[in-house]
Image 1 (cartoon, one colour):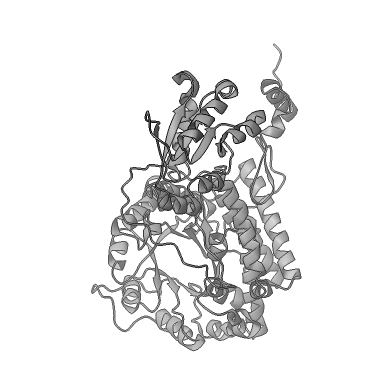
Image 2 (cartoon, rainbow, N blue to C red):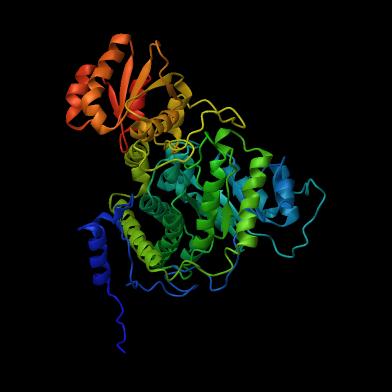
Length: 575
């Protein structure tokens, strides 16, 4: 009996080409926003990711599996509820003394944002938080812990400037160097970290994963250089820093982003001469860029996949977002759902109990390696061009990320990047839990970055469009049903309600729906009739092909089809 041979990759490609009629393999290759290819099949990885707890730390900074901690945004009004509800850590403002007191009394991990005062006042706030509040806990409890709980404090002048919270001089050498005193005065405690390296401003402004990592590395390099130049030992400087990163909706891509960050972090700190180069202080935050105001309940699903990616990516702290956060201050219900989502993933799905659960996947290893290499190449180019401070002050960073956002926004407008509940499956009859806030009157002044949300273009148009669309069906239902459904759903994304054309009515916007064959023989006549009847705008569902010139001459203003620029087309229609 003959022993069957194992198929090779060439055999597989040949079968694909045969089944999908030639050149099919290339058609199955997609590109990431960073510019590298995602293949339909991966074979054995050519890179060794190493072991957990060993350089280059792709598989984690520790060889011990430790479930992630759930870090919830909190304040004096809800911190007790957050902790009683299952949060292990809190993200608070350090000038909220009541919240600080509760956190210290409970002995929980604290992520602390600083008030925006002078440098001395900020340092004083951090110092008070580290040493605890004399007021005690507002709920009357005391900590039983013998050791001080971890505290990661947000001294992050770069992030503050990019958020518009501080002026541009805060990123010059002298001001960054002033952080040396903060580090030198901090307790000699590995659980206390003073300098935050955050990717959130970059992500919110539209950065792809490689730019987010590259700009985080450039920020880390700027802080490291300033601390060492002002007398802080390299090991003390590296031990004072922690990382904060956004996690978006591309589950595998974001998982790889966290793994790639550890690789690049190790490479940067090793090059600087630090002995401990493992990134073991990583705070992952569910993306605000992916949050929608319309159909906000879909945000629950988005946050679920984002927490999943953060956990499998190896973050120590994970902050899930409330589903109604884009509508204003998160409700107690929204925070509870977010917290419970993370609890279920951790306690019932056991995420985090296996070290680097995605490790060993040929796809994950290849994508992690490609992303780390691209991020490192971009980081070194930023350094050759003068570093991140120069990039910020010159306005170059804002321009760079504006271009990135424009490319992403174009894909969203064409629905190549769908936003569920907004650009796909919009519900015109939904009842929102709160009214959407008014849009910002103007972007923040440079060099601050302009934050965006994926849904913002569709939501802005949906809020202003109140007209209805009359559907003009051509031919029997079997011929027009598919395009009627397509057009109805597409118009709903910007708030236009479609209905059948009533006899004798004069439509404001009319949409022709039928088969290509019907268009060839009847569309021109229908368009002429609608224009003569007084229709303000006429649309045709489908690609016009060779008929475009004739249809436009008859009065057709626009064409809607899969891949069209929905926002540009419907913006023109609703004017």
